[in-house]
Image (cartoon, rainbow, N blue to C red; front, side):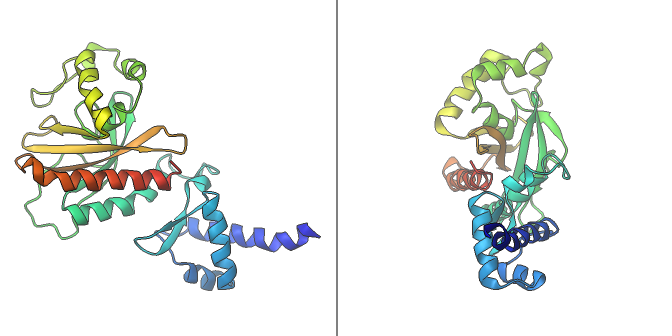
Length: 257
């Protein structure tokens, strides 16, 4: 019967998903086959099918596998953003190492930016700028490149709904939009070009660029941002913007976007 012949494959697929859920990072297909006592050919085939359905994801940087966004949607036994963080972290580490900047992952919490992950260059020189953007920190979204990147991809009506109090438009450095009209005017060109920027809105002497991350419904659910010193010439920032856009696109792909 078809059911009896399919059952071993279903069991193996569940075993692989369970195994991936217990790993701290990507694991190779051969290691999965060895650990579970499965034929390598069957393991590769099952992983391919799981990837096609969004339940597993191949991470090129490490040539390993992790759970995909589809698997995270089936369980509540994880923090709300764990799946997003796990899928984004390898991309962020690659950007930090390649571009020699600090990379952030953040989401919106009302009119605020909540920072989930922060990655810096592996071999720090000791001359890195001091940042206030630690994991768990909340900052006004209209001032941060992370927040602005998400806001720019929302409808104006949605942005208006987030900013209902005059006190929402605080300033940290004496710069930045003073009200909703200012913010919407600044977001329009950022939406057009596909990335956002803040120069000394959060911290004097620092600038950041941000790009939105989209889910499988094409909704902006998060953003990546890069931060470095503001005195760097604009021409030298072009590779950073290009790398950031590529990184955000890769995280979106991993989320099914």
